[in-house]
Length: 163
Length: 429
Image 1: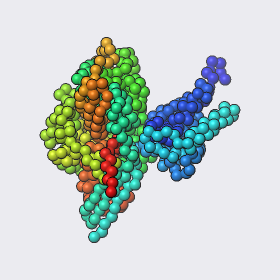
Image 2: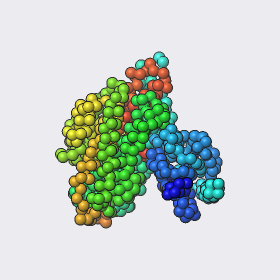
Image 3: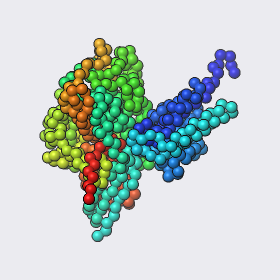
Image 4: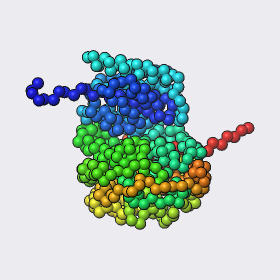
């Protein structure tokens, strides 16, 4: 390295929770990130988003590594935890609850890919919800899946920190 | 007689969950149903029993795309109930916040949702593959709106700095000045946007619409004015309920709003433009004329051009407000509750948004009514399809279906906003 050249910056890690805090299990991603925020060090940026696509693209704009957690409504048993490596494959557009946005998570990922702006590492965790009614608490199934997602995300981050 | 049905089970590139069914018999459309099945959201019910000061933040949650509109209609209605008028510079800051929301919301619709229809792309993703520079321009333009919301509203989504009487904190001149460089760029980008969309191919289509929007003596409308129409309506907002009524329609969760005397009407950018062209800035007027628009535009497919002209106006207006801004002594004016009913209508990106609240002397909300723009446009959207579809009956079904969706997207419908409280009647045997 030439004298005076800046050290490369640490890869920027961003964990994004997506959802609507007032619609039952749709809040699963937000709750997971709120709990993760207290457990992760300063080197991980935790963000809460409502799923609007262009805002998401800004949220991960500077990131090298992204883990996004959202609720899903795919027909699998409530509490199922899905994992997708979206660098390797596209996300099914009808999977996520935030797909009710005209331009949501799946579209933002694909637009970033088309523009060559997809972060180098990008995982999506989907928590299968049970109820999405306004004003409901998280279901027991989703609550359990949130705990598992938190554990899995920490494992992923530790693994990346080592390698 | 040959018959067919066009069905779209899940409308793409609109906000929220909706479906469309068009029944055709021979050369005639026999039925059109725009179905909104996003669950009713009961916000008007939630508001009862809450403090009058809570309405802006509660109603902002109705929509993630246009929370400012809900906050603005809520604060104006509460101030109307309490007999308070908020003047400049707080009033100007409210207009600035609205400029941010128009830039954000309109740009999202023009670039990500509607432009692909005219250019033959499945989505903005396909547009980006062939024209990344255009999509990048859209993303950066939207960001100019985001930054106004972040600075003035405290954050980009669901701003937290708006309150009845003004703001919790007002910006310094220096803080607002940080927006100008990007807004100058955005104004140029908005002008390019107008030129870009003006060249799109537009079906030759219009109907005998009644356009409804606010009109103000001195300005293109955001927060204030009389409700006027292209067929002679000219009323104070407080007379809204005497002229408009919401109807429950069995096949949809959203209420249909109609004019009592004449039925369907049309709100949104096209209505505002047609009723307020003379109030646009000279730059916006010139751009509209260069784009081939007159002082009225009756083709809903050209709403994408008008929407782009409004983005340009919002950038221009934001720069004007920032330049003229004088810091207020206080970020808010005092508002004391009294037993009264307050009315307000402001211009959300998608059209007039009406709020009415009845509060008691303690400021507790007794009753609320919210009529979002998409509720008001539903009947006109269905009428458009009734008259538009027969011209294209020779098209293959998938192309006809796509044409129908494009016609719906002319209105940038926000289905999430349109679903709200329905009165439930239980019939017991």
